[in-house]
Image (tube, rainbow, N blue to C red; front, side, top):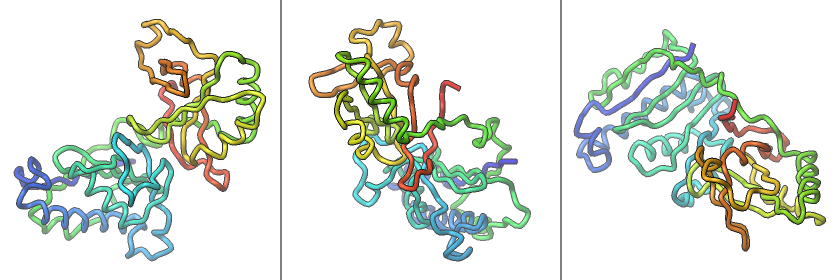
Length: 280
């Protein structure tokens, strides 16, 4: 049964001022120590051995509204990170620097930032041996165990279609059949304003194969065949994206984006990125 641990500043001044508060350094140091202990307790930290912690932390729910800093430019849904990177990302989120994401590991571990300097950690269970002695003795931290969330992350419906060779062949065939009407490809590589880019699929060429090499592993692809050039206001009520490709500038309803989707696999053909199917 999933449980949640909230780690937050004990000081209201730190919770309100974050990095500008006099006590932030002490909180950051204690937070890093507790998170390291938590990771170690589920077999991921340095204390669990190099092999146990290697490649087991992954990025999920990445939000990009500003350019990524150079150090984290490689972050994508499903990307693996090590423990030091995970700690730096956690601290960056709670201080308000971003990038914003969740950090996951096998077995139900998940870490996300909250409000006022807090970190929320989901664990598969509350082990009796999990003492967190550092946190219990540290006056700068406040720990709160909570009841299991009402929705278990393991029950989340995900998009499982894979952007494999068959997918790209179907895209090419659909673009050819729709011509001269356009066929658009949307690549959502992260949530947020900067996490989406558009391509125009040109039929009768090898562009589909070129696009397969262009899109990034972990991205969510949406194919929109012959989009409405002037969609009605009713069609846009549930949300839309603005697509600009060459001379085309269109408003694409979210409903149209959800009709044909697939996730780009990693180089080994395995899909590790998790994209929630909001239509399920």
